[in-house]
Length: 562
Ligand code: ADP
Ligand code: MG
Image (cartoon, rainbow, N blue to C red; front, side, top):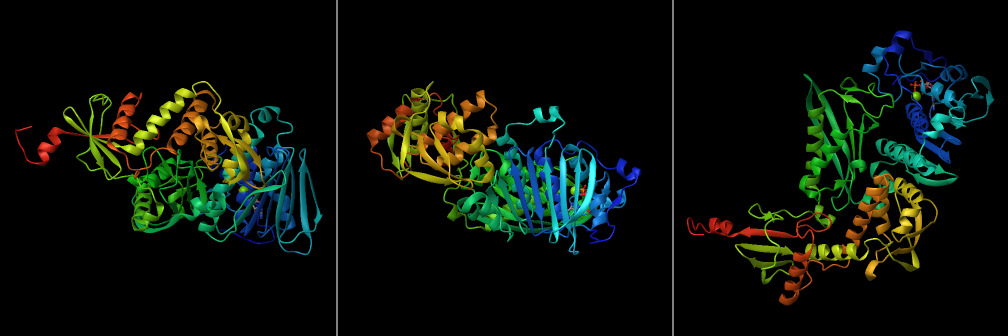
């Protein structure tokens, strides 16, 4: 890191260098301002970064850090275009380890809104630089070492930009997601995020586990295992030492999208789907079908192997020999999960014996199935024509309940039931932002929710179709799904309703282990046969396995006699 602490460290880049740096509009929405200011604070070696946002961020964004600050000359020059202390020439990019390098963020921010920068490198008098309508002023200011940047009236003279912004809740949601990704990429730094004067998230700066707990709650973040993996890899003909480090939440916690797989490369959060997939592959069959893990994976690679200069917002990086890196990530994750004590995670997807295969929808509707008995209070064993059917009683009951609920509520709002006393639910910050944004949808789904400080909500009513009362905690899953469907409306709303019903269908269903007499078991199989989709529970797991007579014949080596 080039970290001259005072004097004239900030210099203008040559035209030639500027041309070799990926250009693009830097400031397209409020979250971009936050990202650039946070990156500057990280590059300044801050231990603590405080972010405060008003409304959607166009009113006011404030980022304060306790980093090394700037002397007067540097501060005055830093707001000019293409001025930076981080590189001198384009070649430096190959070895640069800083988050910034283009020298254009402060200038672009000052261009898009009003910028007020107060900074001190520890000298007796600090400096205030303001840029408003292109007018720059520099004056004395009192401040301890560090920098505070305040941006107001963002896009004030760019109505088209303003128009293109989403709702305030959504814009804040983006900021919140962004802060989460930086806080997990740099857990040794304490972050806080305020919205309209109230704190919505903070991390203590004491390591990854604490950051994960602070952002995801104790249940999810605490139930996690560490990954540390070192590998020598060949990256496009050059060998490199690679470190994979992070925390993996137990597979009992899953999400419907890969958004909660956080990946950082050399301290920079990146949205890299190949690496995210590699993490999920490392979980392998521990994850139920179609579900994604919650995890943080931080990669360290030599600077030459990573090119951060491929994306204007630096959300993606190019990695030399990316496949080898992805393989190392997958291996590291798998190894960590194999050694972890996953019994504590409770439910782990079941491993199917290979001679059993999920029944095909075309095979049977169980009309002629005869119950032979119940095995271990878990499985109903039936004879059906040529096949032996094994029905998972819990999954089957979920499917039956789900289809009944769906039919009963075809076009109605979901009935709700008051919770007395009300219960509180604490959400991770982006999910809390989704609750704010989707109050109406939540109401039609049967939730009544009030803010209760921070990201905690008081749940006063919950969905209760046909007397099946959801628990207050189901708000978490529904709000996560709302957030991930991003208000796409129509289909997404319908899918969400189905998910909610699926969860409700699950709760009061027979648990594996409830004893069933043969008559009840028979009815269950009969009802299952009447379902539109009898072969999978509402969450997509199989309900029935079939063992063909030929499988048994093979097993008993009764060759030629079926
Ligand atoms: P870049 O980060 O690409 O260098 P910026 O426009 O973001 O470009 O910042 C210009 C320069 O201003 C930086 O190189 C750095 O020297 C200085 N600077 C900006 N923000 C801070 C800060 N929070 N603390 C200390 N120095 C800063
Ligand atoms: Mg910068």
